[in-house]
Image (cartoon, rainbow, N blue to C red; front, side):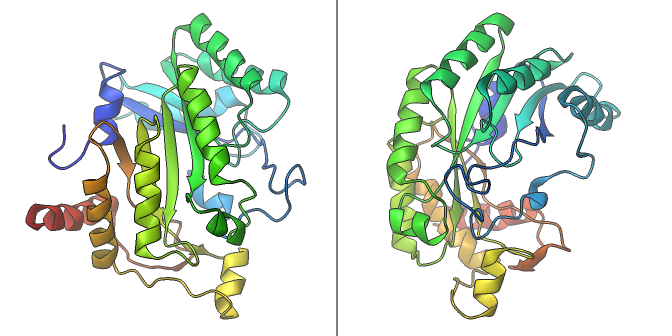
Length: 298
């Protein structure tokens, strides 16, 4: 284990003997919070292009996207295995038969050892869990589910137009875990209206749920989002994190979380042309260095 917390590579090592890389897949599934299924406009901070790797291209099949990703990594790591990561928008939003055809296409690719499916907690019906279990059994490969929880405070979820509740997150987590899937959560730190006590309370609430992994990132103001407009109009005031103040918050989070929950990340970095703030200019390893210095002395 790491010196201060269990990291994501240690978590994956418990499932796979060698090096494993996530390959992000854009299945063009859309989002129920944009297409009117449950809401319109999406979350106020969302510009999904910020999460798409450069090699990913619209219109490519799942198999073609995986091959393109494999070609990129295989030059340096010829024995690498891969996890197909259904990342963009909501990875379980769509007709169930169509979804299963996409997941099966990914499972059939050479050197793909499993799936990671990122989704919303209100898009995880029992029928989906049953079909995923059947797929997992048939291919004898692992399937990980990641829920975008974002916050445990319903007042915040309403403010960011998330269109689901904390109760939805708890329900989906319990059902998915009971069905045998390793579950991950995603949270955003610095959401409008939240103070440090609220953010730490979210971590405490998450830590008692049956989750295997957790990832955080600082709220980023991106171009072309409702959040950009609200900040420009002074209708929302956001915390002004510095790398050091944010690292101090993350150090407190590390101390709250049980070692059994692996921390996948603390920060994210949108492309420069899309990012308005915060503009720290730090790579992930540089932030981790700041964090570990704080943990070493606290």
